[in-house]
Length: 276
Ligand code: SAM
Image (tube, rainbow, N blue to C red; front, side):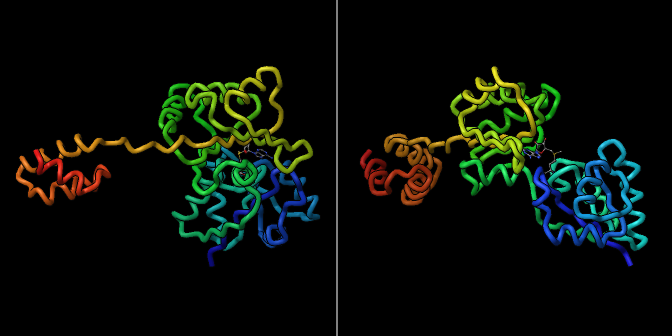
């Protein structure tokens, strides 16, 4: 019988955040696929577990992925862990899940820590609708195009960033979205030096001109203000209705359609159209 790939989220800083079910799943797996075996060993030692580990990361995923799938197809169960947080979210776990899906191997995702969701929940920005953007592209051209496409995005935006790129990313965000956009900078979540800095893009960029970025960051950016529907004057609406009538529409139908499109009251529109 085919085995199962278990996606096991691991703490993003505080070892106490490993759930009982995650620990039990790690204990029951035949082997563990880890992004960095040294990092995962610390967690396994904390849980007093000894398990066979295989390495699965960005630079060996093309060879390691199919080998893991082969073992799953042969009936073994594998727990996938990444350095921290939820496997497959902005890390190579995404590719392994796809390989398993293609090969008909069951994948079971356990809930647990995820840096993006932890940051969003504490950001004090709207959480009802959000867009996860992960890491911005490294290449300047692609990065500009990505940001350009996000300028009118009304949902809250979530970005991941490494400390040595933070200043550059803040500068690019500032250029794209302007200084007034609200930004919650979430640093070192769940760790000793956790810090949530709720300000604006302009203030955050100024702060990091004189302060060295340290630790891991999630940037939660407020969305664009909703676009106001352009107000159409009753006279302009009447012109639009007359154009429809000239094209063969019945007066009643034209008035109804334009009133719906523009928000101008039907009676007002009808009086203007018929009166002229
Ligand atoms: N799959 C993981 C998840 O979604 O939780 C994220 C993996 S991604 C390679 C690593 C990025 O997650 C870091 O560069 C940082 O942006 C964010 N991150 C991870 N741990 C964090 C923490 N404790 N505080 C803030 N950001 C963190």
